[in-house]
Length: 315
Image (cartoon, rainbow, N blue to C red; front, side, top):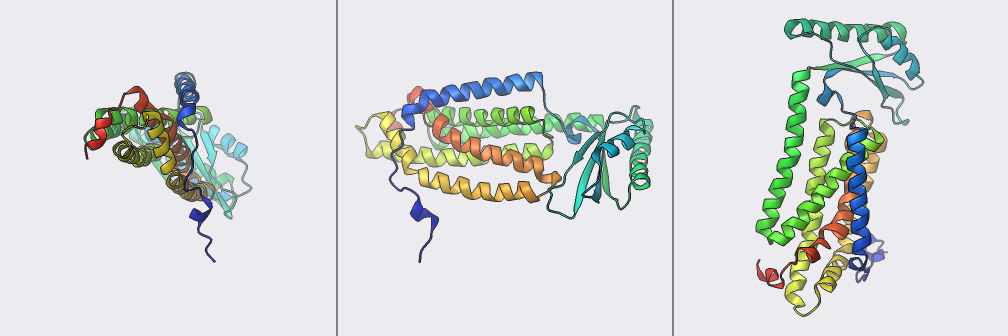
């Protein structure tokens, strides 16, 4: 017997996506406004990569008391600690991440202070808790963290610009505008989600956003290719009908790709532990918002950029 999933998916769907474009674009506008408002008011919970500091990873029993860990580290007088339990509930032992701000000083003085703080954290944990294991400590200076912030956001900006150039040459400028606006939509919405949830935003999150940009662009290019093909095939069909037909033609592919990707990412989020939590969460959100934008943002925007039917003849 053949139980292939594709047999249960519609091959000739006729969902009126374009008919609801104003509702979808209105929702997207509200989502972007809310994301920017949250970013301006609540900010982002930058990880040690971007704010500098000392982070120690401790393997401990599942029943370790986080409040007691916070109290023990707080008594060291090294600044306000950030304690995060990175246990997924499935492993026999938990992972506790202990972060402290960078210690004051300059040059060798700062280095000595940070190394002393590292030793103090590790000693406090081993002396006050049974059956714990120090898995490693990372120390990142303020100058390095500032450089990483600039590099991370520059990478996102360069990725968006290169995507604009690629679509411009691959299709026409009308397509490139729609695709890049959809990508900007995805990036802002992802940053807004991290601002709302206050999950740690670090270099792994930047890597996830860059992956989201590529994933969303790939999804958009598939739809755009079908739009261009149908523009050649149906020369007298109204543009909105061509767009709707093209989205429906690629719907089964979009559903299958997104669903299988989400299965892997949800598994990674559940059993991957704290070190992968932010990356997996960003990817899950990115796949969802990227699929949405390919259908409800990138394609309807072609109506407003007045894509020419002749552009369909340019391979």
